[in-house]
Length: 167
Length: 176
Picture 1 (cartoon, chains in turn red, purple):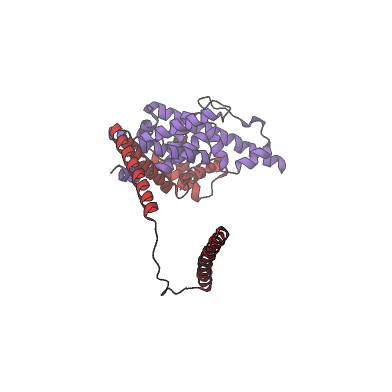
Picture 2: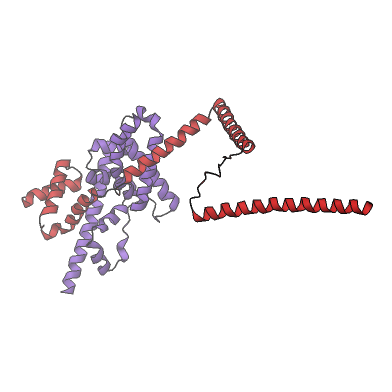
């Protein structure tokens, strides 16, 4: 590009009378070519302008904003719903019904008990530990029953002895 | 519907708003926070969108106001942002001048030292490449105000560049 032409454009630029197209020409000129020493200082300005045009927000910024908007919308729905007195009353009734139902279900389960009958004749233990536990419990039950028998006999013996003393 | 409009018309100008905020606060991280806040505010005012003639101008104004509020609240700058242009480098050594002159960042500092109106007009014209009419709308200025601010801004930068350029040449001649 001719020296005179650039000088004219520079003059117009600094007077504030250049068009956008002329300003683009200047930017292009100062990006691509080596410039005379008297224009060196201006080169920095036009290079800076072009570099500034590439200054952007970090990637992912738009998604961050959209995420915030989405979160806001969800909170907004609940707030809007609870703004009306009738909605608040409905929410309270709903909560109380839920709590009552949960309480009822729990107490029914406690009353009936969650038990299952096992047919011990056909039951097959799955592990050695389980077999050991079952056997130990069976022995304990047997020993309890035997103890009951011993206690009865002892009682009878005491009664017989008392009868003998009276006689 | 409004989310679709937001995605297509408002989110794409966030980079421009970011550059605009950087020009006011002079800090990228803070400018990002400002744009984030602006974008959420714009969304929250979606009921007003139908009454807005120029959405981009409205967004720029909002960014400008929030940036200035942040700047004022933090007292970042010792100089009033509406104050007059002031040459700060009177005490700078030739070495400092040489180092700073080599970097593009130095122009950013020069821009920050311009009065707010001049700085923003130059930003919108030279970086965003807007017409005078668009600048008028976005900054709420008249045409003569836009032209005067642009003229003054460019001339101050020119004087500063020439001054530093001459200083450097003299410095390099002495060194030889």
